Image (cartoon, rainbow, N blue to C red; front, top):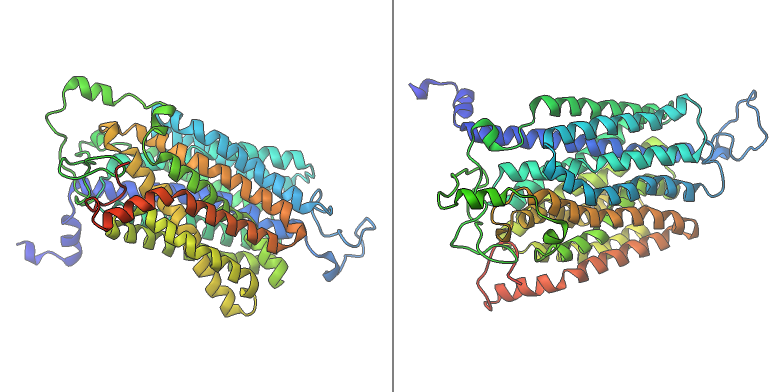
Length: 498
């Protein structure tokens, strides 16, 4: 009898075949994008090793050279303009990433996702390792490091549109904000693991801080090739239902919001073979831009990502300079920002599911983030407890809106009813939103590199301004959501009709 089965076996058999594949796909895509972010993080940890305060160290007696102020630095980052050079290296990656992202979604719709992700992770592993090999090959050319970072940024654009499209193929709407908020913690988990792994080697052989993450992401690429299932239909599972006729789609009309994310009803028999063929066509770039809400959230993400990526690339150096931690301690402390980001992403998704207001949730978190950033800059380093608390709070408020827009919002818009079930549009919509955000990701570290020599206060004023602008860009959508809650239109989950 079933009651005699062991509890663990009963738990396993309670899951259907469809649920098993969905859970496996969610786990794999989580692992894949964790490795992407893991391989991006080392540069922020290694910066404080490439340029140090040599006056506090004992110089070896047999060391050639006469400059006592820079003998321990790694050329070319031993110059007075080292912060500008760091900014150039960061932006080589981020500008290439921003440009490539707009094309990545288009390719992602036309190339099998399994091959696309595998190729991207293998190439990213190669270029990450090449940066670290500069240590062992004794390379001191800024052009080498800038070129390697630019190529890495280009191939890393394969990741986000592909994993979001894959998850969108498997999951319906339902509790998308909460589920994707949890899933999106791969960003922070990757940053944390990247910081910890890079920190192990940074003071002894910083090249390994890149080579080990490079090997890890290449290994996950091989895993992707052998195990990723792109669509439920490929293994005989039922595709998810993104829309129903009795509710309204975010931003436009009629969509499902009450179905469970793991439900998998069959496709409607009313869809003719002619229309089904039509829906499989890839959407154009301009067609994706015409989806209501895409432009607002794309521009909001530009400023939200500007703040997030400035912390990603400059926080360890800021902690090292202001709190006077060594490179490893600064890297370890910076992971608290990402721990807060995990909580912020989950809370943002859960709140937006319960309230039905994606834009309002983002706006509130952005409003609160601005004064928190001001406080962190002024009192965040007064004590260890204050530093830990402020990093956790700032991480949650900064990364919460960023996580919500890049996951649940992108998936909502990419499975919009105006697309009539065309799941192939999801990759392009995701690429447009994240590509626009990546422009901000490139601008943030660049501006930080230019402003930091004039004082860290100016960097934080820039971040606060970006948060306020991100909030203002959502004001129209927030207004419509609030009107819906006040009874001027039916309360809906997600976005409102425009």
